[in-house]
Length: 75
Image (cartoon, rainbow, N blue to C red; front, side, top):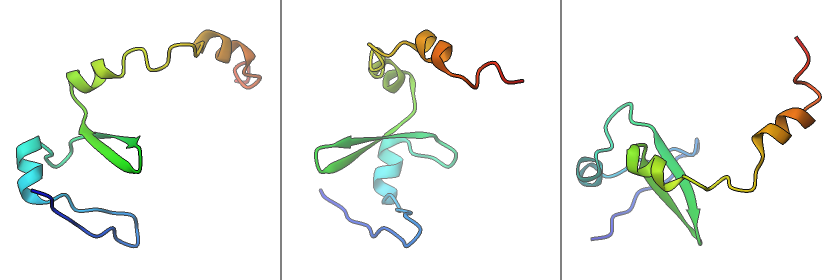
């Protein structure tokens, strides 16, 4: 069943209660946002979500980025 909500002028969105309960979106839960085509995927942060991100930074060298950062030596 599809449900709808309006985005406020501050960009806030209320997730319908039924979906919050079903998906475990409780007060204080951190969520991840991902663009999916023309939509938005919102997932609660949990072990499975973190595991799904594994490898998403492949090809990005943290060490190289830190070494190339001219601000790193400022104290």
